[in-house]
Length: 293
Ligand code: PAF
Image (cartoon, rainbow, N blue to C red; front, side, top):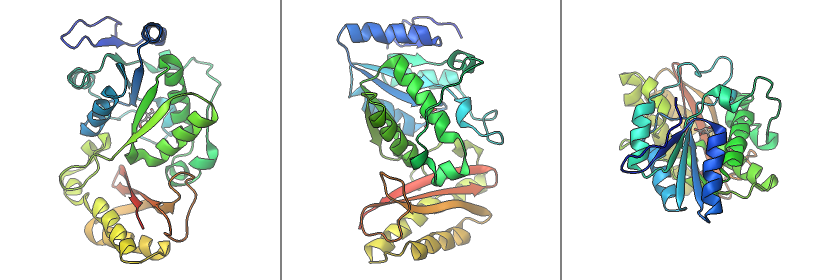
């Protein structure tokens, strides 16, 4: 895709060359302008645009990156069939006040002899890190690269990927990257299903049953409010609900962890993250709830 300054009514620039992105952002910084970054893999939905809307209020300039990052996909995952719709994404980006959309090709982001990786293994051992080896290493590496190119003052991520958010916060702190990491609430359909680009893979039957995941989370929150503290019993409650309402689904994990350290907890005595991943045939959906005691 060519790099060209786009003189549409919202003056959104479109770049695919990392060097040009760096120069563009450097110019803004030298003018004393602050910059917000929303990193995405595209196929934008209302969850993404809520991140853009928030980011828009946090800085003078707003950068959106759209990049299906190959290094965060395992060999048997959905890299090749990950949904893409760049023209629609750019339309949405313009409508939500993006100043610069960055849409690199993989070859522009990774040299053939790329050899440097960023990893936060301690926080990536459980949950999605256990099911998707190497996933967070790919996420941390690409986000570090985007931070290096954009030098954002603030970067905005969704809380649906809570573990990702916790890892990126820790990485940013540990490496003194100087970026304010902001997490925004999960955006849900009216029936409770968390918005995800992967929801398009669901069959109509699966889509109709998928809100059972959120119902299960709410059920667990209700039980905690009613005094249940034991994570084994709470986990069984969730699994039983899914077995009844989401036929054919299999639970990848349904775990209770400390919301910052991502370490397993045995009892819900303090705010605890209940995070789940569920397979519906070939689609893996994640969701979570911060349990209040
Ligand atoms: O959450 C995502 O969409 C991706 O993991 C991210 C943060 C854009 C990195 O590729």
